[in-house]
Image 1 (tube, helix red, strand yellow):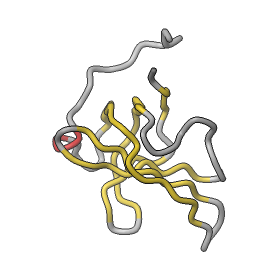
Image 2: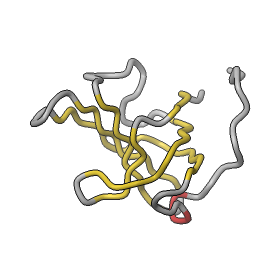
Image 3: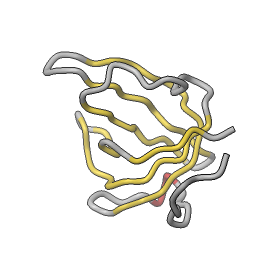
Length: 95
């Protein structure tokens, strides 16, 4: 599948820095819905260098975004509930 927009160069998850934009690729190794303060979908993306949480506010689910799925995500790295996270990233499900 060809992306309709250009992606920045890939960043290894271990090299992602808070308050900086990054583009990461990896496999979803965990996903859950969290709803204490609203609807939040949280997944953990893993590559060969580490793990990074992807957080989607206002989403109960994303079709195809389940454990074992390869994903490319791009956005600002920050913190969510004490863990490094990318909030509402632009994403693409990979084959």
